Length: 436
Figure 1 (cartoon, rainbow, N blue to C red):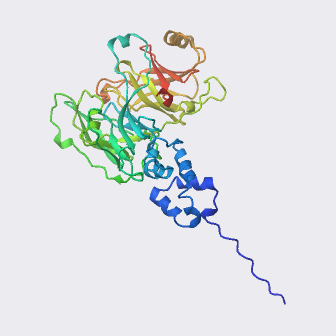
Figure 2 (figure 1 turned 135 degrees about the horizontal axis):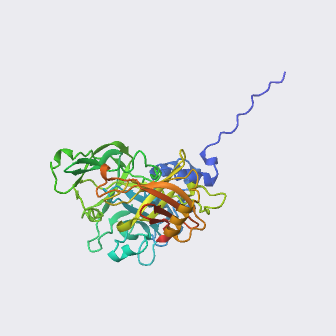
Figure 3 (figure 1 turned 60 degrees about the horizontal axis):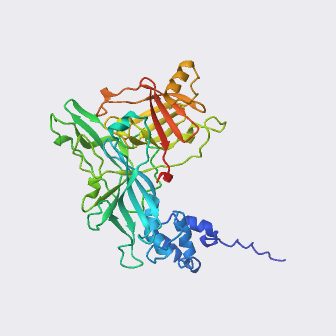
């Protein structure tokens, strides 16, 4: 009788059998120490530690393809010391400054003969309107960019050392360190204290408006507990000037980034606020989603309102240009414009207008006459019914009104909102890094 042998089990397959491009993609999710430990776990993977093409591929996912101006450092050092930790921050961040809000932009610079490559953090600043500007049509303008901090190796003693975060806001000050802190979720918000009582400031982000937060872009640094702040017991009973103060709200905000330095430059960079602001916490910055859907002509069959989702810059009367995030609600079909930066009338975090996108407005004679008066040329537009939000200074509930609006979607990457009763037009342009 011939004895049959049991079938040989298939050869076991491990991580080293994965394709190279899959390995590189997997490596991008590991913290640098974990990645190095993994690569040191066997001879096959260890060969990748000294393979500069591995680290170059990982660095290219952040847009870096040349390290000639990184002080002679290797791709391994640039990736494990700089990009893996701080690379996820690249993009826009929205600050929760009361009323005004703010935006910072984190970018990668390859460097040149005059400056070393690294990561730069810049503060958006919009031009303050002059009296003569108010006589012409409202136009949105791109921001100017104010250097706030840099992360590079220019002050690192050795070629293998970590990068340093330095403050670059005040060129007159000596070189000094800045600090990034990743703060845990918290419920702290803001209120306005007046002689008539206390009024809640819009949460930022809020339960209604949080789709703009991109939770994948936090830096890979240790998260520290947020302070619990309640300034209510210290308020004056009858303030002569309205007071902005911090206290808990019902909504729990996600983790946030704070920026500080030893000379208090970040405090001096705060936008001007006409109220007495006694909140003493550092501003919290949240990663602002900045998707760029493909532009489709609004009258073409493939057009859909979701192509309008994203970051827009809009004209807001005497307040000048402000930043908004337009989101989409499918039931009922609605576009909503939330203020990322704001003013003392309609602050950051508030809904500034919304439009019913279920069906375009019918081209009645009165609508055509209104649009011609406001837009002159109305060919190529779709029009949608909506409403806006206006308010007196302070954004207190009894001050708010909801006038009728018409959203005009045209051929270009431009939105126009017609305020029907006033027959005024707010113009919005989609923000692109090409504006830089």
